Image (cartoon, rainbow, N blue to C red; front, side, top):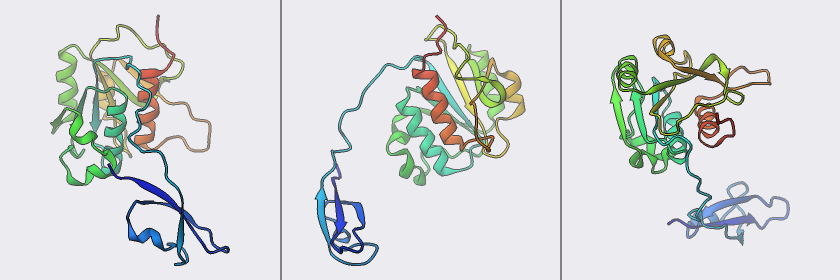
Length: 213
């Protein structure tokens, strides 16, 4: 496991502070002014065990409908794994987990999460719905995810769908949805980055308090 340390520029007028891998010669000089640096501290190892909590829905899968950004796909995969998603479906132009550039943001989730690739996301949703999946969509025009009671049972197969950064979820998929959710907004912007929106939504679904008793 890679270890890191915090170094600080020794120049009184600079004092630039930054993390660097232990043993990396680049850490010996300040990247801002070029002066020598000093070791300040060593952070806790990133592999320290974190709080683990059972996910609410044990049969929740995810469909990425034409997500164009590799950064977003990788970030979503890492978040999906952390939130207990059990299967990833990638549709249309969404890059599969085998894409070599996804590892930078997925950080191992690309090999940990089972996945299926589909040329047509609508066909994928139709098939999964016929198999008994409830279709949940994150899209404008839905109900507030934070105030909508989420249904039981927890072992119901669910497919959560998130869509393209520009056009959202395919309208034919929205028409198939059993639940459509939206995140509340209070600023001047009316949307979030898709990876950020997914992270908020999946953690509210899996660990939030709006569970229908």
